[in-house]
Length: 162
Image (tube, rainbow, N blue to C red; front, side, top):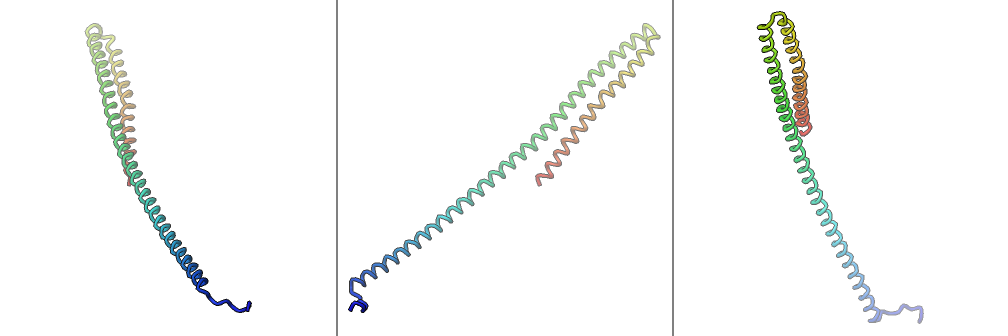
């Protein structure tokens, strides 16, 4: 009876049970690997998100520090320019006052010694005063320009920081 199906013997039943148990264990192992993979993926995503937030906070802090430094630098430069301009103007005024005093002294001397040179010295004095005013105007213009520049830079920085 070779064509007749073989009946199931206890050995074949045990083999089938063992195969079924192995397949079930393999499925359980596969499910455990899938769960571990999901857990690793979630942990990686969480770590990447935490890292991204930390980098964003550091970048924001760097921008705030740079902006504060820039604003303080602008203010310091404005104060420096104002102080320098004031000092230069004071020095020029002092020099011009000394020059004017010398010319007036010379005028008094000329008046005492000779009336003929008085007209020339008066013209010289007037020309010197005009020259002084001409010399002071660029300084004043530079001061105004520096003030406008620092104010426009300051206001444009305020506008861009919003």
